[in-house]
Amino acid sequence: MIQVLLIEDEEPIRRVLSRILSEENENYQVTEAVDGKEGLKILGSKQFDLVLCDIKMPKMDGIEVLQKSNEKNMHVPFIMLTGHGNVETAVEAMKLGAYDFISKPPDLNRLLTSVRNALENKSLRTENIKLKSRVAQKYVIIGESPQIHSVREMISKVAPTDARVLITGENGTGKELVAHQLHEQSDRSKENFIEVNCAAIPSELIESELFGHVKGAFTSAVKDRSGKFEAAHNGTLFLDEIADMSLAAQAKVLRALQEKKIQRVGNEKDISVNVRVIAATNKNLKVEIEEGRFREDLYHRLAVILIHVPALQERLTDIPLLINHFTTLLTNEQGLEPKEFSEEALAKLHDYPWTGNVRELRNVIERLMILGENPISYQNINQFAPK
Image 1 (spheres, rainbow, N blue to C red):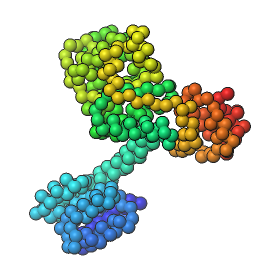
Image 2 (image 1 turned 30 degrees about the vertical axis):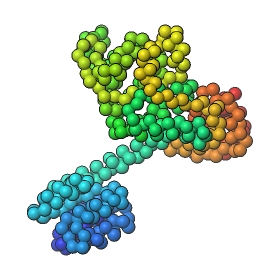
Image 3 (image 1 turned 30 degrees about the horizontal axis):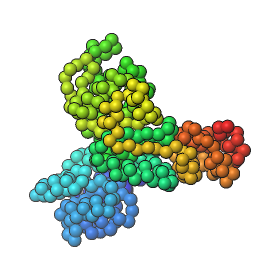
Image 4 (image 1 turned 135 degrees about the vertical axis):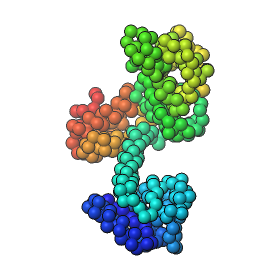
């Protein structure tokens, strides 16, 4: 049932609106309140999907009801009902977050349309909150070891700034998690986070991917196309595996960082960009510089702040927490049966070398949850975990 709270001190209007809503949709269950004070009390007693609230009422007006609802983070859409002389007050209500306001006596078609739209909007916002929660869970940094505490502390200090960050660490350690956290904890968090895996893009295409191109710039350029720098404008651009970028592309990235301008391939027109660049690599860039594969001037531009992500072998005490995290994540994401691990199985997993780091551990946990018994045994580890 869709729960609707109707707060209205005029009994004839309350009765008519209640009847209209009930007749419009049999799934609407309408609860009535005769004034703002009673309405706020009812609103705090159960979960509602929508509130229709008069503005001018005794004891407590609709604006105060809306304000107190916001203060208590009730996250329920309000449609305000107002007399013809209260338009300014209605505008104030909209600034406080009301979904809509409707003059009394209400136009019934407009009222019902607003009700349907408000409920649809609430559904979308709820789904968006769930999606963001799932994304946040996916990119959380798990662990209580001193090494992970150090990484989290560095993120909290650096994230609110616009400083460029170079993240180092072996494959599979979770460098992309650090990049996501830097973005989510920054003032740019509401803007785009754009990720580019430099190792996955052929060298002849990397410049087009990063900076875009104009029609005719090369054989397959059949139309103008923006690149990742433009997509990340006002947000964050994460250049993963930066050491695998061609020297030509490195020169253009250096210019973009220095001048905050880019040029699409095949065009000399400058495009201004406001982008925070975060880079990551599993290679030793100082060695790459010595051997002529990476520009030293670009290194110094990127490595304003260095964050090193430790290998799993350096933080073995985090393995039980990681196992618990991955089992919960896989249960929620894939609907797998929740399973426990025997103490012998946990001890066995603790003793593995984990050359693939946290990524390898996650893959092993997924395999064990699909193929293993419940609880997962020492024998299951021997069967399904790496030898």
